Image (cartoon, rainbow, N blue to C red; front, side, top):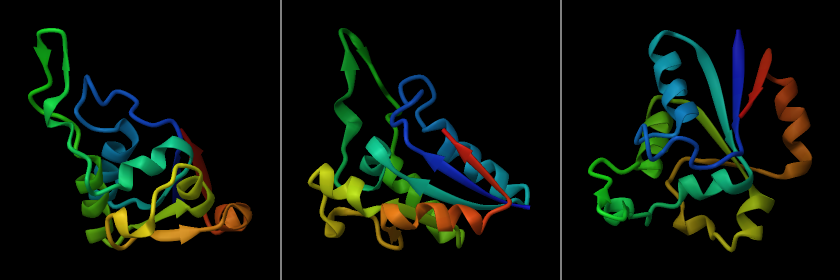
Length: 126
């Protein structure tokens, strides 16, 4: 079975867990032998920006000592030969240039998303 994880809601649980739950779940499932693809769309396209630095994240006196490193987490997925798709129009809407992103992402036009979904047995939208 091949599944496509679509991540659209960005920064879910990144304060509590130091990772995006679905990116983490994708790593865990790949380790267990699953065949997955990941798609970033909406605000989640921000995950792929290399220059993020959440190291100073604090809420009042509470400092986040293990901040999320989402671009690095995506790079590790790509290194595991996982296709990580990113919706081009969502990047453009946010003013993010391709040269700001981790290498190895697969850009996809929003008009091709439905056809991509058809290539997978299941689609999980988060």
